[in-house]
Every structure is written in C-alpha cells, then in structure tokens.
Length: 394
Image 1 (spheres, rainbow, N blue to C red):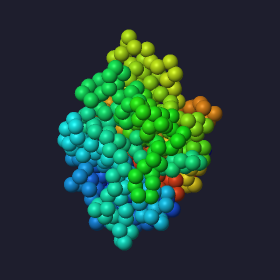
Image 2 (spheres, rainbow, N blue to C red):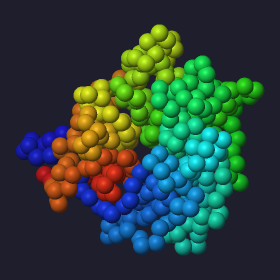
Image 3 (cartoon, rainbow, N blue to C red):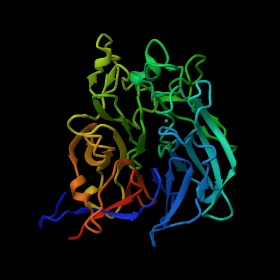
C-alpha cells in the first residue's frame, strides 16, 4: 500500500497515551468529537479528538466491581444505537473470585449517561446477562449491536477446553447447554432485560441455551459487523498452533454455525485430540495462520468504511497481539480482502504504520482495534497508547 513515489499511503499517528491496560476504543453513533477508551480494571475515559486531550474525570468508574486480575475486568463495551436519545451504553466485564467456581462472573450490564455528557453514573447499572466462569479468562468479551435488518459473546479458559467447569464429553465450545464458547444473540428490551429472537437456532428449546447464535469457538475476543454487507467477522484466538478469522454471513438468517473448536484449530485438526475428528459440518475460517510464522493471538478488526484512507476502502483491517514471538511484545497489523466468500491479499502492514512518522512511536502488544463514529480505525496497545490509522503524506 504505497503510492507511486514509494512513500507509504497510510500511516499511524498517536493521538493519546498514558492509559493503564486499555482494551477497547469506540464512540457513540453520530458523535464525531470523542472516542471512549475502556481500561481493563474498571475505568472508561474520553479522548476529545480535536484537542487530543483526555478528560481528567473518567466517564465511568466500576473499578470496585470489575476484576483486577489478568483475565478479568472490563473486556468490551458498546453504545446503544439510540444513545443520543436514551443515553444507554453496555459494558462487558468479569469480576474476581466469585461465582460457583470462585473464578469470577461475567456480566453484560447497561449503564446510562448522567446530565453531564462526559460522566456516567455507575449507580444506575442494570444487569442484562451473567455467566459463571470456570477459569479467570476467555470471558464475555466483545459486544455490539447488529446492523442487520431485524437485529438489534470464550470457552471459559481451561486448556484445550478440558478442565473444571468444561462440559463433557466435548467441551464448552461444542456444548449447546452452556453460553461459553459461543456468539450469543439477544434482543434488549426497554427495561434492560432481554428476549430471545424467534429465529435463533435453538429458540424454544428446553435443553439448549436459546441465546446461542453460533458455537464451536475458543476465544472470540474481538468481532465486528461490516455495516455495508452485514457480514460478521470474528477473530478467534487459538491454543498452541493456529489463529483464525471466521465469518457469519447475513445470508444465513438462522445462524447455528459450528466453527469446530475444540476438535479443530484453524483449518487443522487439533493435535491434542488426534483421535477425535472435527465435526463434519464445521465451517471453515476464511483464513488461518501459524503461530511460529505469523502471530500467536489474533485480534479481530473492521472492514474499513471510513472516508479518509482511500487505499483501505472495503479492506478488512485486523491484527495480532504479539506476532510470532510473544516475548517481543510488539503487535502486528494485517489486512485482507473478503469478497464472494473468498479471502485474498492477506498481508502485514505494520511496517507502513510503525514506527510512526511523527514521534517515531512503536506499537506495543496490540490489545484491540476500534472505530470512531466516522468509521476511522484506531489501534490500542498494552503500553497505554491509542493510535489512529490515516492517509500518509503524498
């Protein structure tokens, strides 16, 4: 992605720093002046885009509730599509040490902004849904609202989906009687409760969890919808061998896809379960890659639908937390094109973005990508930085 003069046509610029374990960035619909950064251990902060200043007072502080461990805390957030009217937003967080396994409880909770548009009141929390976690990782992570017409979720964390609190005989990923290892689909009601969409694959079942939309996932830490096509892209973190990106197509209105975990990892049979063939109907990822070659912890991203970076239009931008050597703590940024059910042009663009032209900053371990209200893409790293991808100098 370079122009005819050989100079990069894209670049990264650091817009803010000093965050503690930032894990996500997003913005309310239509609010082009701010982005919101979720810190793992309970704070959400506001960056004012015009000044690049971070508000001194957090937008939300739930540090007394959110876990303070390495796998718990705030792991995702999203704004209600009608946020400008109702002020509602939703936070995915996991507590420490409680629940039936004493390993934490995952919460999806609704909060509401106060009379001050820069501050929300933690006291108006409404719990939407919870799940007990058997281990303190692979919790409820990404949450979002679907843009599909009529629309309005890891496996629990045990090694190889085979530990305390993991369903037998096939693990949480394959069991349709647990919420873990799934993408869930629910309709949020006005009071913060939820109902089951009648076209969910297990709607009306007395044995299967009706909230399940797709299953056979290990740790879908980050996902997104392409607002133009309705395709859902899912970055599913692998165990020891492969990373993968899966899709859920808007053309399958009934859901129910099985992506194959724990018996398949990426496109290969999981070596830990050599005698157990993958499910015959398992849906292939659109791409997978090897840990030793490319990266070891995929971070799902976004199809770029912004207006400022011409060379990225319609391209899926995603990344990896570490790259092939997790000891270097340097993230990777990738792109691919997905059209007609086929992924192509998979490439790494990290060197085009970093070190940054202004300031010479490097990308630390990548923890998330995010979008602002204009569809521009941001990168968040473990070192506390927020970067924006933009068009480079011509």
